[in-house]
Image 1 (cartoon, rainbow, N blue to C red):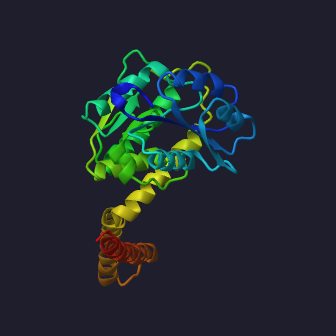
Image 2: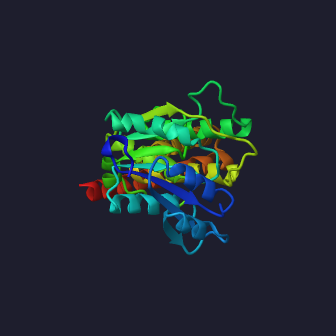
Image 3: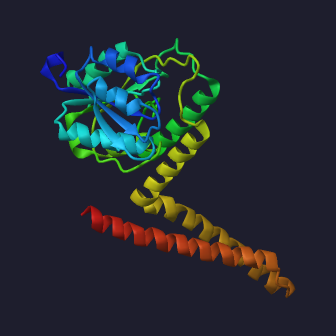
Length: 296
């Protein structure tokens, strides 16, 4: 338990084959909190054994289920042991221990429910260009779909209040969980805040493939929007397809009436657009009705 305001600070670490880093990391983290959860996500090395020997609570996944699965397990365990604050911290050595107090401060002062350590709020931070472009693109998508106003949606260095742990139940198993949690907390009315942190990119030790990471996040976000906002996801494209189909249909009819000739390509575009638009609008209406019933 942390001595900070007598709050029970729990640090959660998703880990996969991190035997080289986990020992030194846990020794340092114990200066902040004695309650550390390590989710050993199907590691084939000694990650879990080392973590147990150093006194961490270890959650064992039989196979590598993904970052999201590890975070879900950590959320559940933190709630189970009645954590006041959960700090999620990567095992790859990129986060600085001294930034934990910076992350905790807004929750300690009751001015935020979730605090994100943003690498983009620090002007001195040097970020690999490919990561910067990818993260900013994903963050933009998150902000547009979730109504958030943040700079770093993919930061794994976060602090969650007790209220968030009690109410938010993440479902994603992959990298999309970071976006899912932000969208859900924003929708639930929780206060989201960012603080500047520095990421250590020496050697770029992250095990996350940037392409699979980006794809996972985008698909997760689209899936969430498709289910939560079917009128937007299906309805708007449906209306566009229907209007395009009708326009081409009218054009085909006009040509036929004037020249007595049916232009097959134009007619097919008109029919296909109208059919696709109708299907999408019907899908939007049905899903909206189902979602409305489930929510209420």
